Image (cartoon, rainbow, N blue to C red; front, side, top):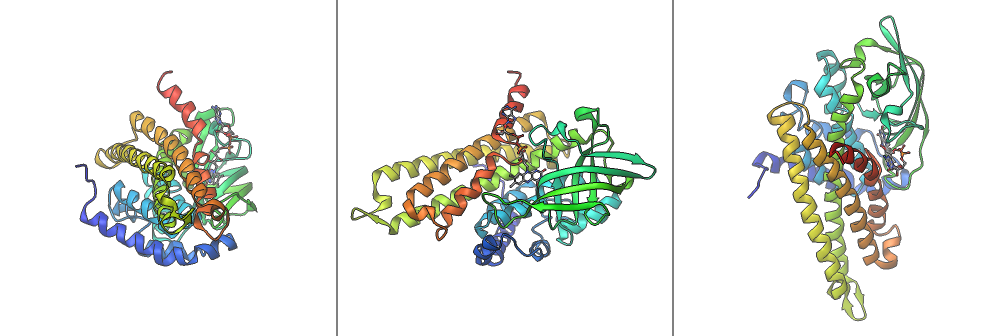
Length: 389
Ligand SMILES: Cc1cc2nc3c(=O)[nH]c(=O)nc-3n(C[C@H](O)[C@H](O)[C@H](O)COP(=O)(O)OP(=O)(O)OC[C@H]3O[C@@H](n4cnc5c(N)ncnc54)[C@H](O)[C@@H]3O)c2cc1C
């Protein structure tokens, strides 16, 4: 039997589970209504070693492999706040992997270590009002001026954007260079000229903040550039794999919890004198959901095995084969999670449509997986190219 988890993974999983059940779940409703959560949660997670479990000790992590991150992403949804889960996963798996890959010792000390300890909050700034799927179309521009770069432009949809201490940001250093004109920077949000212009009102994931950012003549020291100038797009394609993989992992975990929760609901709820779950029609729909989740999880584990091999065993880049699998997983997980949540909501009838039951929130929160971090259509577009169709 394929069993990637050791006693250390299981212990870590229990730690994350306790954190989600004690530090998130009791406050999930309050934070959902407040459309906010305390930033101190990052520090609590950092102190428990949750943020840096899968990072090398040399950069402030615990030296674990990628299966630790999987355990974390599967347990956090027990907190019943997809917004908080997303905020924490941005910190651990979206805004920071590229720093571990490319950061100088000074950049690691100033940005990555504090982020893994929960002392600094990170955001990833790629999307712009005019460029989401088509990343090469970004227009935020960094002009070299002596020892600094001067940044001008706008970013949007930035998770953790109102609270971040720094943004791992993709900008153009050569406006005419297309994909080859992009570079990555670590941009402290306290720099003059950096402004959070507004917080976006969303369909779901309410506890998490999603912001629009303005940069007007922001002077970023050249020592904050990550890696080589002009290589940003290549780095982003690597970084995206961590983002998409962890999104698929946590999405599938959320779907499994929704099915289990709905099943319990159906044992109590009676229709025409019988528990709802005893109706054959629903039994078949539940069998269908369980089967598809099992299949998707098996595929997810294959993707994780490939990713873990590339990044942790051979300590190299993510291979094109792994990129292909992760892109497929992003589609599979996004579509399946949407359909599972929809079926679970329908199973609840009218109670599925009111806020008293968590399925309403899970249904709308889950919709994001088909859009964020590369939509299903964008994944198909890349796959068609990658597979030479
Ligand atoms: C809640 C939330 C949080 C987010 N967090 C972040 C974040 O932290 N950092 C960040 O940088 N971004 C973030 N994003 C942005 C997200 O990654 C983008 O929304 C996503 O990449 C899609 O880009 P877009 O919204 O500009 O849509 P568009 O690119 O305008 O796409 C519009 C439609 O066209 C489809 N499409 C795209 N390409 C093709 C194609 N080749 N063929 C056919 N159809 C296509 C898309 O699937 C979509 O249906 C977040 C978004 C949301 C909603």
